[in-house]
Amino acid sequence: MAKNNKNKNEVLKLFLINFLKGTVVILGIVIVLLGAYLGREIYTGWDQRKNAVEPDSGVFTESQIDELLTATPTEPFTESLYVEGPAEVNYGLSIKVLNATETSGLAGSWRDKLYALGYTNVSLGDSNEMYETTKILVTEEKMADELRDVFPYADYEVGNVPDGAVNGPIEGVNVFIFLGNDSIPQSEE
Image 1: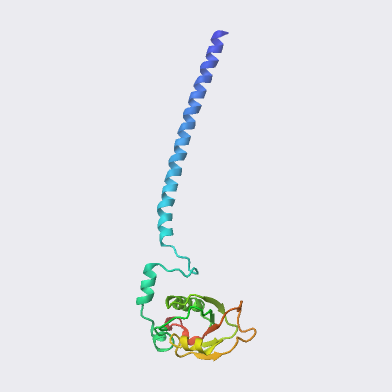
Image 2: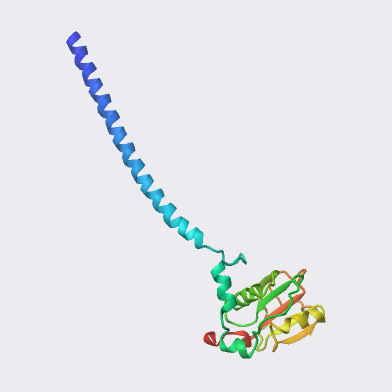
């Protein structure tokens, strides 16, 4: 009986030792795999986060700002709408850029140009009407004078936006830019 108990104890001891060894090996493999995964995520994730800029955040990287400031406008902007911008920017303007064409993304590209010129309160929307020529509706004439440097060939009006002309909220907006077909870069027409 003592021999039987000794054999049982040795078997139990061998089982526990092998069980612990197996557990250590499995844990070692898990740690190595987890380390490799995290290392790859940190390396590639850091690279992506370092260069990431949210498109609608209004924040540009240093290289994007340099590119915007040194970029030469395409031919249609040089001859129709886009000029260097005002000498002084009125930061109190609340501008809503509205796409009044069938070209998607047009309002966003003009918003980015206005940001680059120093306008900070610029929102986007869609017009319920299509325009051939860009129309700018302002609540005061002096606002139109400032924007004439940016949009010299647009049609300007002083007044309020007609009911139903704009999708989305318009409270607090004092400048509405209805982008017409003349504001589309030639490569997109």
